[in-house]
Each structure stands twice: as structure tokens, then as C-alpha cells.
Length: 255
Image (cartoon, rainbow, N blue to C red; front, side):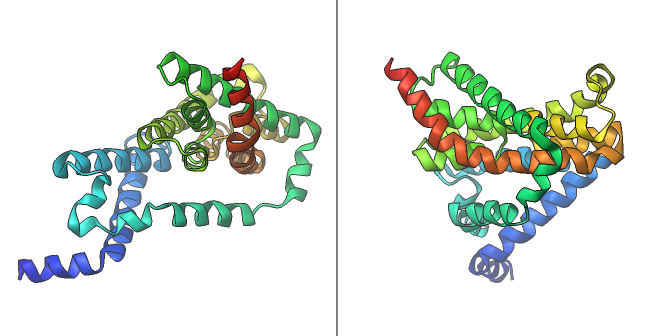
């Protein structure tokens, strides 16, 4: 009976991966609501759990594919692969409209460019301080400082190593948690109490999950406005980080 069930799970690895992901998201949502009062977004908890499972899978099997090295979880090799990753990014971008970002006006656009540039180059400097001085690693970790989506997209585009991509994801998760927890305490100080300010804040911070959770804890009415610019942050980051910013880093390193 046990062997029959094991064979069934192995043969339907992709379904098992989807089921396991759903359970992780469900558990993360409960933890976020019940234990942190939504101060830490469920997405950040789920990603952190995924990184831990990937590490555990690699240690247990001494393999190179994380949790996918365990036979019954082999479906994660496809679910976590570049094809579905790029598909989700494209599908997210398809839901965005440039007409929406115009509602934020010039300040929102400036906030987007400043937010992405500041996060990227700050992350790149931190990468250099950690000993990653090549352009590929610096660009990937810098992109991860933008969001935990931009990091792996940039890493895959420039050919960064898997450990550097993992660091970029961790940087993005840390930023999401920081924005979530820090939004409330600084809201009064920076005047985050109106839709225009929320749009600018979303463009500067960028991490959609962190901005949405932070604004929800501050004033739920501001969430849609912050989400408008934060949503475009990821798309613009995926465009600029592996191209323009990567070229700039290469030029700086040569100098």
C-alpha cells in the first residue's frame, strides 16, 4: 500500500507540488493572521518556508535541486522552473495599464525611478561588501534589494549562480518584512495619510506585498493607491536591472 501510494505521488509530481504549495500558502496565511496580526505578509512567510524546505531537501539528499531531489516532490523542478516563473511575471504585467500609473502623476513616476535606482545600487554596494564583486552577482543581489521577484529574474538573465539568486530572494523577503513592519511607525512622520502620498510611497518602497500590508495596518483606504505604483515597480525593475543597470555596473567595475 505504501509503495503504491509512493509510486502514485511520484507519477503525479506536478500535482503534488501544486498541492504542497497550496498547503504552504494556507499555513502561511494562518500564521500571518493569527501570530503576527498581518504585520508580516503571508507571501514573505511562504517564501521563507520555501527556502527552508529547499535547503532541507538539498541537505537530506545532497543534491542540487533542493526539495525536488526528493522523488515524491520532483514536480517542484517544473513548478519552480524558469518557464512558470516567467509566465507568472508576464501574467502579472498583463494586468497592469499605463493609464493607471498616470494617476500618480509626475511625482509617482519620479518615485518609481528613484526607488528602483536607490534599492538596486544600495544592494549592489552591500553585495560588494560581502565579497561579490563581479557584475553578475552585484546586479542580481541589487535587483533582489528591489523585490524578491526582480532578483531571480535578473539573476537568470545575466547568468548568476544559484547561491547568489538565493541571496537576492532573501534580500527581497527581508525588505518586504521591513516595509510591512516599518510603515505604521513612520506614517505620521512622513505624512503618509493621503492617496498621493501613498502612491509616492508605493513607488519608493516597491515591494507590493510589503506596501499593501503596511498600508493596510496604517489606513486600509490607502492600499489601492500604494498598490498602483508598487505594482509597476516590479515590472520596471525586471526591465532595467538586467539591462541598463547591469551595463552601468559593468562600466563602473571596469573603471
